[in-house]
Length: 286
Image (cartoon, rainbow, N blue to C red; front, side, top):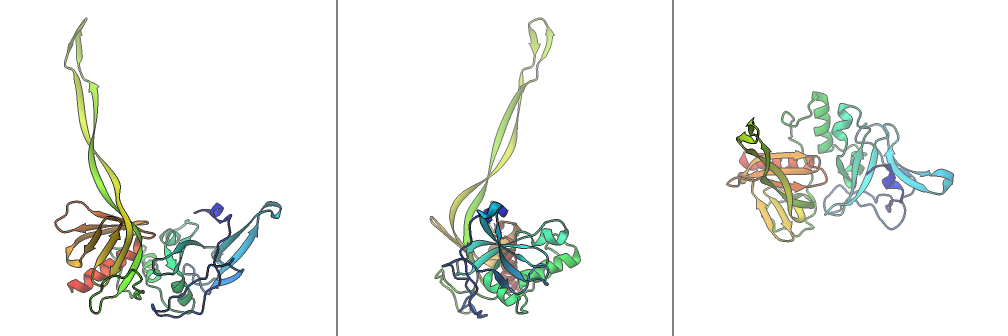
């Protein structure tokens, strides 16, 4: 969402007093406009500025827009709704001009994370991104993913085993890659005399790839399974069944044993579920 997405006013308020437990998630109330001022004490990108709410007037003062951004680096914090467990979500928008900005751009953080980060508490996503910056790695293969995530409330009513906790739960769509073929033909004959030709048409076939949405629902990750619950089907994937894992800005791709096609799940930010699934599989297999 660009700057024009802010031509209407965001309907959020100042944060409540933070509690650093999943049983008491920090929320931003949504019953009136957000007042100007400090929203979060520290920017996750530059670690120096404060995240503030500012109202800017348009031409002749006829319109106004609220922009949430860092007072030092001008990184924007764009509200993108609420998570499945009740937290307000903010997407980071940088200027995207250097390596660090490119890594941070598009990342999603929850309101409770941003509040406690401003009080000096580390954030696992920030730790990973900063290590990638220090090592100048745009891939995650050489990055230490041994970070700690806090469990969240089981608002989805997932049936949990003993000592099993939920660490991620977000809206997601289930997609599947489809492979087809396209055909093209052309004339390949040779004229040997007037009205006489040798040969004829020649064709070739090429594979085509497309992605089709199969279902929509929610994707949850615990410390022992990945669970998709959709309108038409439920899918549970255990760590021992995962043979490959990849992610992009807005998806994760999971390769499952005895299944030829990858399972694609669209999400707000692919980094967080990727790291959680890697941690889950590592812990269970160790």
